[in-house]
Length: 77
Figure 1 (cartoon, rainbow, N blue to C red):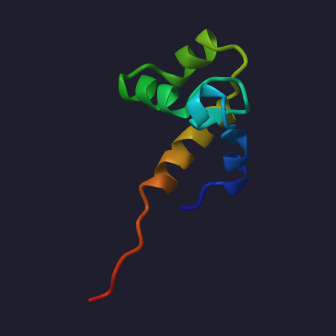
Figure 2 (figure 1 turned 90 degrees about the vertical axis):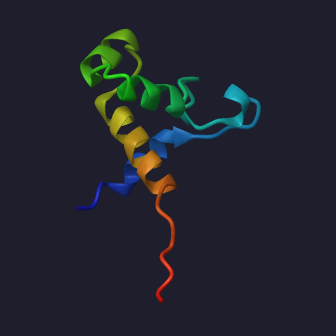
């Protein structure tokens, strides 16, 4: 299963903005905050209601960003 890699274009990192941490579309909404909300069982619908500037693809972009960050090369034995 492959997610659309263009989703990652929604994730931005700008020195001086949110401490240089990854954000969604320069909105000062950190990827880590959205991931933590999802981990605390806040639904995507509720997040979108609370943050009207967000779009559903922004949440998918955060999940894909996190998934790509946890992928490590495998060493063959």
